[in-house]
View 1: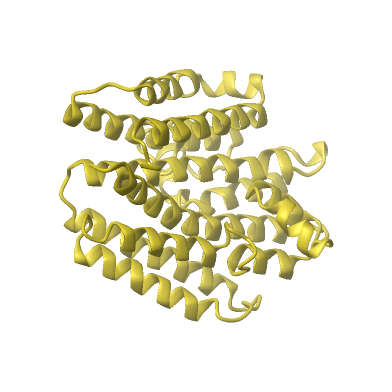
View 2: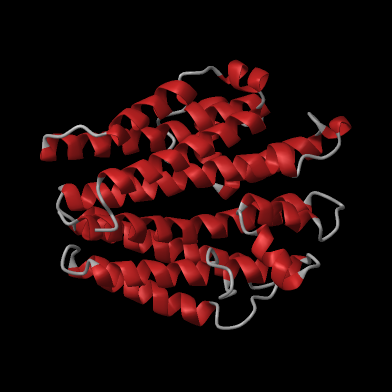
Length: 312
């Protein structure tokens, strides 16, 4: 496969996943903010977690809830806004149109058109929950079209690697919002407020039902971290995503009969981080663990681009 085609598939999938995950990050920030008597400055934490605070501050300066949400959803000056990344996803889908099925192309194109409608104007507080739900639904339809119509070959593998690289990044960032950036005073740790915020994190990654099946109804922080980091049954956990990246890179190694540096990095990512117990993670520091994971995940992504020559 041409590197440019492989890159188009990888980035189409990353951008689609990023659109959904930005909606989930806004939802996490909104749910946590509702439990706090904080100011609009709390939204700076969400912007920092989305890695888009610098651009926001350059353009707007003062942080307000309404402006932060608008920046994350629809501001064209934000390259990571939902509207921006959906446009990039559509452009990449158009680039690789001969490699994807008609159903996948049509679902990407329709998602772009629908989101342009939904985000044509600033979303009010009353309409925000429905808008976030629509974003998740539309990107889910694209994912369903891919699962249901794509041949399981190198085309599918590159798309899956992009999806799970972005998803692992998002789960780590959403966890970091709660534990490090939006954590209230030390006196609140273990309180009912703290527990409500942890439960909000579960809801934001659609994990509350699965968590209760495994760990019961009490939202204990260590159990939640264990579930979202180490549980390979949870489709948004770091372990699940790292496993899928490793598996799909392994299929490429078999198909091309070539093992590259990115395969070793994928193995190391799983072994270095996801072989630790939850107690070891907390002893090390959850924020530090997440930041190190994000750094190595980004390095893996760059290695995949280099090894498979996405720019050629």
